[in-house]
Structures are given as structure tokens and as C-alpha cells.
Length: 562
Ligand code: NOJ
Image (tube, rainbow, N blue to C red; front, side, top):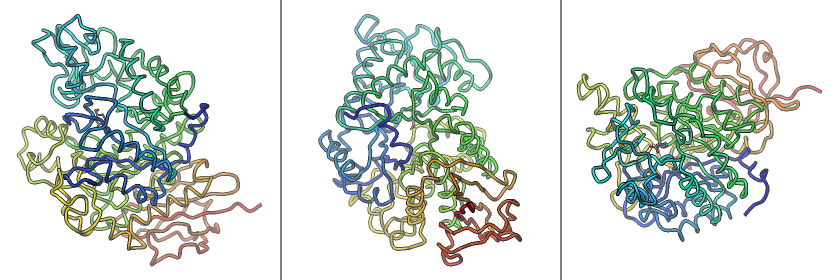
């Protein structure tokens, strides 16, 4: 056990790598990624410059929502290995200097969890109040599967499920449930994990009486009764106290969290988290791409990123991400197929130098792209299927399928593309899910061998970031906010400044620098056009402006004259 609250500050200079294990690497050749595969890839993760790993749920689960429906919190899914293998991975990660955090899913369990199996038997058993039961449902809609209530004849009541039917919501108002959560925290902390990413954590306290939602968008209308609910900060304080004993990091996932409400979790008397994930910048096209797809707009992306940078500045710490297991691939969203390498790098540079802790999702570092499957029957994600069956019903099959191509979470969950061999090097046998057919062009092995690959660009950016305090603690300032093609910001600390310039244009464009930068002598630190620009050379920023190549990313360093 580590001592003292401040010991968790390591997260500020960390770079996280996120593993959705089922699709990462298959070590025992059954077609499913597992902890044996992870064990063998730890050096690779380390080679990126990552200093921490976040595991999506590894626990036993019937997989209605691929691990987010847990049936045993203190064990490992047999598909992934066992506790002994997990411990081996944990110890080796620690030896390599990487921390490990687990996913904590306490808003709901699986309906196959023993607590629920008992609870549904009747009103007077020790688990009867572990879940939210009602004689009559309210009008809430679930986020995944129609109405949020399901009737259980055995008990003669309905239970609440904000997500799938197989994910009944826990009753966090029951002190016994909170004690169970603390036991789970201790179980993993005693084993040596370094913290938790906490799933839909802003949903765990529901308004007394579970009143009807209002407004004509049922999901949003009901959310006001459970998002940032009445006792959220009290309950989280109890869990924080446990984590404090171990100096464990807590990172909250709160759907629809605004920077303002995130600050409540991150600072002051109600501080319970070290970081919160923002959702705002995922709306640079549209978060709900499945039914309201809109083209990517750089201005929206910049605005959201700057908002969180500015609002949290000096009050709290940002988490930075472009991809995770819940969103389609970012090169397919914010980048370009034609300029795959260039745009993959520009997206990396745009966020890796912001103030906060970067998270890299498996495959993002090689620019993996969305998969297009021929029929909805080939998709496995519950939310994709639900969206297909629920939205755009009046449109034809082709249209609806196209939306799924753009929006499905399954695109982030295809097997990792390690090489151009059989099954992309993920497994010797047929993988559990489709491999993206572009694996021969986009894979780790190929990019290892190319100096200017997206993979090596990630390594370079991370190395620069990790070796420089300005890029970790320096102030953030955005320039040229209204420019629809270029994202420009600085990070400054003492007499040093880094200037980040990323073009999101598909052709070369002139970029006139703000006055203050014209004629400034800088050193070129990062470029995704190494054949056109010389890394390390002195670059005096021209008065006449820079000609930026398509999706060009430049990071230059300037020192103030003393
Ligand atoms: C957020 C998780 O990231 C997502 O994958 C999951 O489906 C929901 N929470 C429900 O647990």
C-alpha cells in the first residue's frame, strides 16, 4: 500500500494506453484477446512511451455489453485468463514502470450477478434492496434498449435499467451496496492496482421517488433525474476515502458532463476524482452520429478543447483523449482516408500537447479506421443494434446501415492490426470479430519500419512531452480561434513556449501567423512532413506566413530572450 494522498500525483505526467482486451492480442489462440496476449505486448506499450494502462472491464460477464455487465467483481473473465495471470501482467507492468488501473462499473451489474439473482426472488431477502424496484414504472427511457424498466414476474415488480435489460441499476442509496463497492475497491487495491476509471459515475445517485422525465426527448428528459443526482458527492466521498488510503487515482466517466459540473467532482470540498472525461469534443461531428450525422467541424473541436482547458485551468486536471471503445475511429471521423498518415499525425499533435493526461486507445497509434460490415446482423454491439432498430426507421436499409458504418462502437473493437499476416497477427485462429480488411496497409509491423509512420509520430510526440515540463505544466492559450482549418495553441512556462500548429485542410493552405509570432526564432521539434521540413533546425516564423501542407502538424519551441 502506498501512503499519503499526494502519492497519486503521478497521473499528471502520465500517458495512458487503453486496452479493450478482447480485441488486443490473443495469447492462447482461441480467437479472443486475453491477458496472455497483453503480457507479451507490454514492452510494445512501453515502447510508445506509455506510463500507465487502463483496462476496460476484465471481469466475468455474460457480455450483453461486452464486460460492462459484470457478474463477479472480484475475478477475471475466463476468456481473458485468471487472477494469477492478471497478477503476472500487473507485476510485469510495474517492473516496466507502468501503472495499471481497472474499470469500476457500479451503476449497474449484470442480471446474472448473484445479488440480482437473489434480489429478484422477492421483497424480503438480504439483497432485495440492492436494486431499484417499483410496482409501476416511470416514463424513463434506457440509453440502450427501449424503456428503462423491465418486469420480473417472480417478484411482481419492475426493475430499473438505464442501459440494457441485462444491466440492472444498483440502488446506491442502500448503505449495504456502498459497502460492497468499498470491498471491491479494496480487493483490487490490495492486489496492487493503482486506481480506477469509473463508469457512468455521475449516474449512480437517482432523485428520490424517481419522478417522470419531462420534455419530448425521453432519454435527455429523464437524465435530469439521475445525472449528478442528489447524493452523488456524499457517496463518492465514501469511495474517495478508501482510495485515499492507497493513494489510488480515480478517473470519472460522466456522460454529458459539462466542464462546470466536472469541476464539482474535481475540486473543492466535493472533490472525489482526479480527472473526468469530457464528451464535448466528441461532438465535433456529432456524438449521436447514428441519427444526426453532421460533417466534422474543426471550429467545434477547438472550441470544446479550449473550453475544458480554460475552465479547468489551475483548478483541476484534464484528461485528454480522441478515441476509446465507445466511439468510432477518429481518423475516419476527423481525418482523411486520402491523407491517412498525415491526418492521423495531425490529430495526435492536436491533443497530445494539451494540458492534461493523454489517453491513447489501442490501434489509434496506427490510425486504425472504421469497419464497414455488409449487414446489421454482422454487428455485435448492443447500442449499434438498438440505434439501427430505433432511429431513422423511415429511411431505407442502405441509409441506416451507412449510419452504422459511421457511428458504430464496433469499429473501435475490431482486432488489433499487428501485422499483414493471418488474422492481422491478432490470433492464429479465426478471431471472435471481423478484422478490418485494410490490415495489410495499416498495421504495427509496417509502421515500425517507417520512420514517418503515425506510430513513430506518437512515440516522438510522447517523448517530447514527457521530457519537458512546459508541455506538462505550462499554460495553454489558443490563437486563431475563428480559423476553420488550423488549430494553433501555445504552452508556456517560464521563458519557454511551445507553439503547436495543426492544419486540418485537405490541400496546402497559407497560414498568416498572429502578429506576436512573426519573425520569432524557433526550433522545429515535431513535423509530420520530415521529407519537406528539417526537424531540429532553426525556423524563423515568416512575416509572410507559412504554407501548410495537407494535415500538416508542426510543433516549434521558442525561448524568450533574457
Ligand atoms: C460507458 C462505457 O464506456 C460503455 O462502454 C458502456 O456501454 C456504458 N458505460 C454502460 O456501462
